Image (cartoon, rainbow, N blue to C red):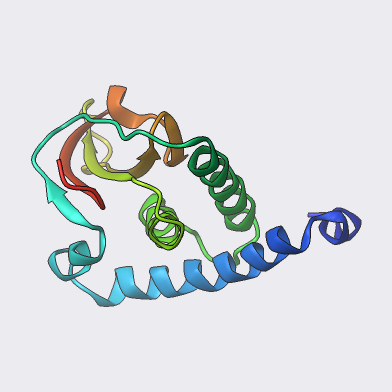
Length: 151
């Protein structure tokens, strides 16, 4: 990131950048130090559905887009690899903070490649917006889904 570009960013985006940097580090530590079962309690309420969507207000949609941009920016500059699960945990933090309904998915690759071990992926959506991980429903089979809303 160019220093001049960073200085032109609004104060809120700069603040979010630094908070996301710290959150990515904390999420990475949590992922490596806690079991998946224990960590999954933080994801939200477990949903038994495979595919769903949430409704967003205009303000929530704008906020979700800001979260997506901010996370995408910060993961380019972390000195460690910020995995899809790390990114989803950071996005979950912001969605919870701004009361944005979200769905967090954990899935396995549909295609089995013999040379690669099982490929897992986590992604998070808010309404039609893929905040992290892209739209992985076509490439991954959902094994768990979590939300902050009750269906």
